[in-house]
Length: 125
Image (cartoon, rainbow, N blue to C red; front, side, top):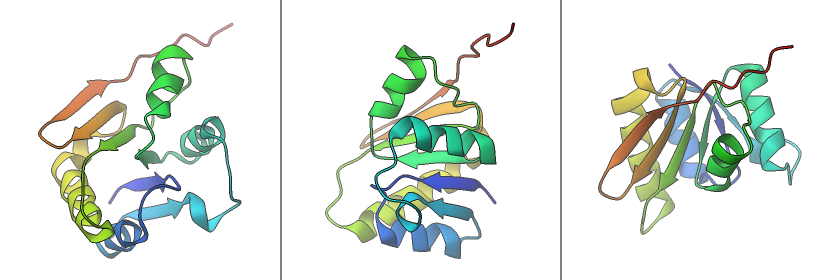
């Protein structure tokens, strides 16, 4: 079971499929609307949840701005014909790569999946 924070752009059928598969999913659309990406990322970190999103701005937050994403981020950059097709692909990738998602930035494309260990930023004194 994965603990997931699904961004607002994740289709409803994917939320249903992840929950039916036993994952603990919080969907941004079920809470206050219009949360900024940094707020979504902070919430995921505070709750120990992997962010699932279609928004490439999360890469900018993590790699250019140094935001903490140690719980993990899965960015889907896939072409689908329907929300149901997207749900099938999301669930397949979470099942296939579930053990390696925490602590990584994963980009799922149409033809390949890249799993990159997240940088550790020194936030000490």
